[in-house]
Amino acid sequence: MNILVTGCAGFIGSSLVDFLLLHDHKIIGIDNFDPFYPKEIKQKNLSNALKNPSFTFYQLNISNGLSVIAEKIDVVIHMAAKAGVRPSIENPLGYIETNIHGTQEVLNFMKERGIKKLVFASSSSVYGNNKKIPFSESDPVDNPISPYASTKKSAELLTYTYHHLYKIDVINLRFFTVYGPRQRPDLAIYKFVRKILNDEEIILFGDGKSARDYTFIDDILTGVYNAMNYSIDHTNIFETVNLGNNLPVKLNDLVSLLGEITGKKIISQNTGMQPGDVDITYADISRAQTLFHYKPAVTIKEGLKKFVEWYTVTVHDHPV
Ligand SMILES: NC(=O)c1ccc[n+]([C@@H]2O[C@H](COP(=O)([O-])OP(=O)(O)OC[C@H]3O[C@@H](n4cnc5c(N)ncnc54)[C@H](O)[C@@H]3O)[C@@H](O)[C@H]2O)c1
Image 1 (cartoon, rainbow, N blue to C red):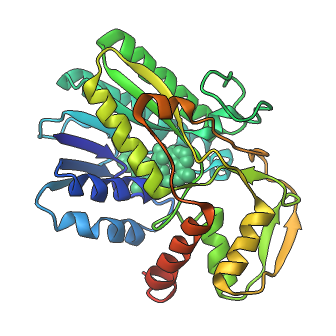
Image 2: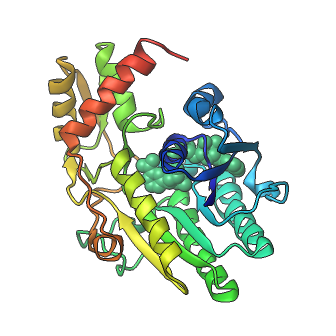
């Protein structure tokens, strides 16, 4: 199958490209090397794929349209986005430009080429400060608390409109705090590990009791792959599905685990919660289990060990 992956040089996108290439698909990847974090990291993420003749790369900005893509496409996996909650408060227009306008361009491209299958990377952030846990896809998502969350919800609405108008089969996947090798350097686990290994102080936002449903990258990749195959096997579908771990971990427990894994003493200071941050994320994953047998398998301890190993070998000892 010919699969278009947008945002193919990022953390999840590049991991997905490598995973799909192992499953004998032909991948067309696009990315504009958005300067949110260094281009060199993204080029390193793509280095294996670029050696593979089944991979074709276009450096382009989705907001400028995708018409230069020459290949026939069977499925689109739309990962390109400006990610991150806090920076979206500083630059809401940039997030609207990429996450809403850019998604509209992806949908225009699908309509024009008659492509009928879309898997879209949405986010648990759409749940805002949902009081009911675990978060279920049927919960209201009308109160996003950051521009990032608003753009992801808006993009979910756009995918519905294109499903309705042009019979595009859509699966909106709401990812819950994804971590693992290649993780974005702005994310907490990455920043903590860098500082802990350098014996530096880490800053903990809030009292340490906030919790995240950390989901290891390999579980997300299997989830995306299963969702894509479900979409191939079904017609006239529009599904919104959580991909989480169903086991929130408190910030204090995460930091203790990192101390245990690195063998380092944790030096930390608490400060106030950041605007846009939610207290807890917690995925009800029963819909993903029912639809496409999603079953996360990597525990937080195993996942953090893998992350620390990767970070030590790839980043700490060999910075780009
Ligand atoms: N990492 C997480 O925990 C998480 C959680 C929920 C949702 N998501 C979503 O998953 C997707 C991937 O996230 P990630 O963590 O890998 O982020 P990332 O920043 O590593 O990857 C996004 C990629 O999109 C590219 N991109 C940005 N703007 C673009 C544009 N205009 N045109 C083309 N490419 C563009 C970037 O250069 C980057 O390589 C995003 O849509 C994100 O919102 C991620």
